[in-house]
Length: 444
Image (spheres, rainbow, N blue to C red):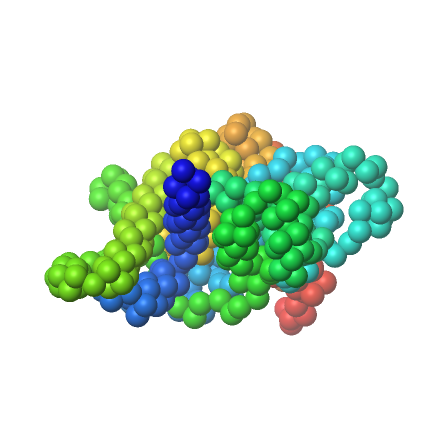
């Protein structure tokens, strides 16, 4: 009976680990842009003889250095296809903070801590120093650290490797049993492979510890590392929006739907060899194919669902591109679709939507509300205010350029109340110099 029980426990652990790999793979596949997805699948095809990958390039790739020819620089307030399409870790975290946290003193503390996140994703300031610099109490600062550690990617905001791995495991619903316990209580022993001591303390088998160790090795020691790589040189759209006589429709581009084919004849041929090792091998490879197939379908469904919500919410923009965007937060879409905010963030980051008048990154359709007006009771989006700012500066007399204070006054005339400091921040984000730097000295 003891032997049978032991075998049963081993099978359960192996199944648990497989489920963990499946979920991690689905999350990973959702994060990929079109080019990264193709590279991932090509690598899998090299490793798995049962997989064959084919893709259809619906359109030529869009250079990350190009801009839509149908829009002038001044109309291009959404920064579609930016000159540098790569997003830094700082920018990625900042976007999440602005789109998920309301403007409160606690958010200001989170923004303060963001300045101390290094390129690997670690928080490079002690709790005591942060409290001293901000004049905050310990409770509020701990809350701020907790909030920044809840952002994507998992593990960001940790103070050391142990905490980073622990955060990643805690965010994974399929983390092996006791993984979090070992990371908390036996991190040093686990790293130094003093597993006999762990087994005695935690009443675990060495096989269980090995499986947890293997799982931890799948976690990343540098959660911010992927943001240090150079961004893609070319952009392939994931979604295409079409306008047929005022009727909007959205679909996945063929470029974003690589076909993964299963080599059924080869699979059956291998099974006929009646070799147990070969049988186990090809069955394992078939499971991998099944995982990839499901992950691709889930990726397509998620991105398409998010795209439909964006088109529905920003319908006026797609029907007439001169219309301003409506305010929209990640959490709004998450609530509508019944998904987690981190899932929405992964679905829009690095993904692009193609229209007849330009190609836009999905995340550019998200923006918090700045000010409410009689015409826009729900509030104007940040991008709308930036568009007006660009318009004012484009039309200004370059011999007497508008100061930030004068721009505030012009916005106020439109019943848009924005502070001078906010105008300066928006102007700098658009890479527009100050009025003194814009001034031109020309003969009358």
